[in-house]
Image (cartoon, rainbow, N blue to C red; front, side, top):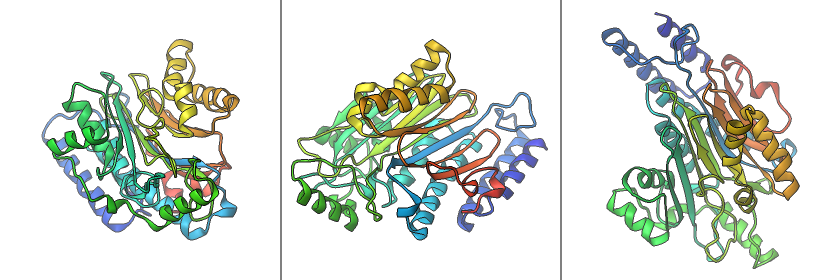
Length: 376
């Protein structure tokens, strides 16, 4: 009965979620409650039970010069709605006893399918007027990992990365070889025209006009330079942490440039203690081994995940001249969001069911707090 009360209250808190998602969410909870009456279940994140295992999820949609002054109210609501949809979808996996890797994939697929973010459908164009996609995923319990780089016809690169993790002896594949592997494992492929969006095309033309040889971070409708990489980190009821990241890279990139997103230890990392997904200027994140370094500081120096992340993002990365941010969580479900830019699209549901959706550096009371106070 305690679990039933907890999930009922959580559902009531998320009343601002669109009706279709609420119905889907309710059916899942109802099914879970019926099953719990008939057979033993692994513990879930019921805060009223001392023996419950925590569950939590945190996601991001990119970091950069994102300011409220340069964001229209309509566009801001679009970003918040897209973040919420992905967040709730991932959390729905967790409360139905799904694995953290499934929660990560579910959330990232929804972000990849949105034209708002620089991943999947919303990916930027290369100098050669193509869309070149990268992704990676890692599971902390066994350190298994999969990554893909430079693919041009994979609808959801995060799914291919995970298939490489589970069905291959390799960790990373790239280009045509990765696309052949995808075809042999029934990973959805699309006509490259699927990735075309007018604003990304215009961004490429602007970048070429400015400097034909220079790769640029993508610009959004408000003409803000930003890093649009997406990512997610989740903790499931079995105590397993997974992390994943997906991106279209830099506008006008050349020569097969690959950033940090598909690099394990740079753009994505997870072990039994923590999980981290990064977004930012990839060359710096690779050189600093950002995501691994954060987890290493926790393991070898005993830092909390927030202190470890701030040391890397606010000190080490800044000293190198690198911009960007990270999200993550530890084995207790403590949420981390650290970035050294004006904003980062980010959202989380913690172990108490508290929902947070934020964009800007300065905290807006309406963007965080208990779920019933969410105004989006």
